[in-house]
Image (cartoon, rainbow, N blue to C red; front, side, top):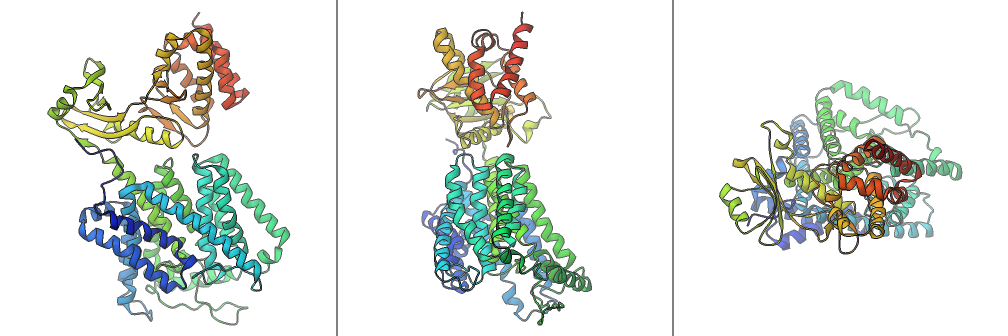
Amino acid sequence: MPKLYSSAPLLDHPITYGWLTLGYVALLTGLFWQEDTSAYTKLYYALLATPALVILLAQPTYMKIILREPIVLSYLAFGAWLLLSLTWTSADTSPASLAKRPLYVFMIFAASALLAIKDEQLLLKALRIAAVFASLAALIGLAIFAESPQSGRMIGTGALSNPLLSSHVYGFFCTYWIAIWVADRKSPSWLSMTFAAPLLAALLATGSRTPLVALALTGVWMLALARQRALYFLAATIITSVLGLLLAPESLLARGMSYRPELWTEAIQQAYRHVWVGRGYEADFSFLIPGIGHPLTDPHNVELAVLLQLGAIGLTLWITMYVVTVARCLTHRHDPGLQLASALVMYGLAAGLTEGSNFLSRPNENWFLIWIPLSLAAAVSIALRQRASSSTPLSNDQLAEMLREADVIEEDGHGVKVAKLKDGTYLKLFRRKQLLSTALWATPSRRFADNSIHLRSLGITAPIIKQLVQIPSAKLDGVIYQPLPGDTLRNRWRRLGDTERELDVRQFGQFLGALHQAGIYFRSLHLGNVLKQPDGELALIDVSDMRFSQHPLRFGKRRRNLRHMLRYKEDSHWLVTLHSPALMSGYSEKCGETAARKLGEDLSNVQHGSR
């Protein structure tokens, strides 16, 4: 039997698999409980970099998968230029020691990708475990700070060494919980906000203004993901900032601009002296700013640091890495994993505009702004690519063998369309009818599988995908799925009396309204594709032709959706002639009276037009 539909090949050794997962959680939480950054770095080598390297050496196939990811390739291009700059750098550290750092960073890309290849959900669960731990660590840090607030600015526990660097870590996890609240419709709102609250309080206690600006810019980005909740978050960030100005203006205003404009002007002037290639990685810099009695060595801007050290060429490669990442996130903006990763990438990018100029180092707080978000985005992107290439090829003979003992459920003049296989699963086949078609790169079976997975992630019951298959010689592709129990509304309503059917129509109105409010445009929506399950809930089947939006459907799409459904005479008779008030009553519960009234007017037009 061909392999099951899954996100990627299995890792062969469960001990190594557990080791890698533990290492990822340790990387994300270690700064809270390790004594210093040196111990934290060793933890990374032992629990994450080493098992990832062992797996790559034992199974080079994984390296091929990782190296096909554009985000990783763009990082490698940047890393190659950085290594070349060691031939002209003036750094005090030996080139051999500096040359190891791109490898350290590559291993977080590799480790994250290996976890995602094994199980993308496991990677995201490990991140969630770390985020819960971070919230508890923030509470402990706040309690310690409340007992001895003499310094005026909170630092935190473990290896966290100063307020600014602490804010990088707290900000990363605060962004995580806010992104979950904005984009994850399955996660209870109260849960996300409960865990975000101590992290936001810790951020404010550090006295750093950078995270507040970064959170606001992240909120603007998340408007593209889920407008309503992102607007709430953006408004809350602005209100929090205003309250901070009113209640404790000295903490936000006393430091002014911290000489940032003067520092950036001086850094740009120095960058012009070596504009194309820079002065080399880790080259020393000194900035003399009027009003400060000592020279500064940090430009307080990641992009300026890259420009100074690696020149315009290095900065172009750096920007390319982010452009590739953002493009990938936008292309798959409906994927929950990339939604989360993109929010973390945007937070780090925004925070790096005024801080975090140590852009390539051993594991430390700056990784939470740059490399952990980027590696998460790359890992989820790799998992998506693996899903997209997981179809199992079948010959005509193999297909015939599968169908020999199957029960044909539906067929047409070209052959079988749906069959119940020997093991009880269903095989649905799709035929490519044209030589040039979008099905060449987005097969109907793939759309069926992805739509089903997405619907289930939104809490809407849909078929459980078991396997994708391709029969190239016959221009066929197919999906094997676990059938859902129950009966279609069309079949069921034929057996019901008017009173029982009216209750069902009202429930269907609620279901239709919920779909429209969730931004789900099911082009093939009709009563033959809606299932009434034994538990009384409704489900969708035959879901290959579907579009998702992050905001409720416009009324034009709602009207087209309804009119497509009413082309079927039985459906129209039940929904328009017999039970229109019940349909509108249920619809208004989910969409409101205005939307229901507009849809009711359209129903009336359909009814009058049919007379």
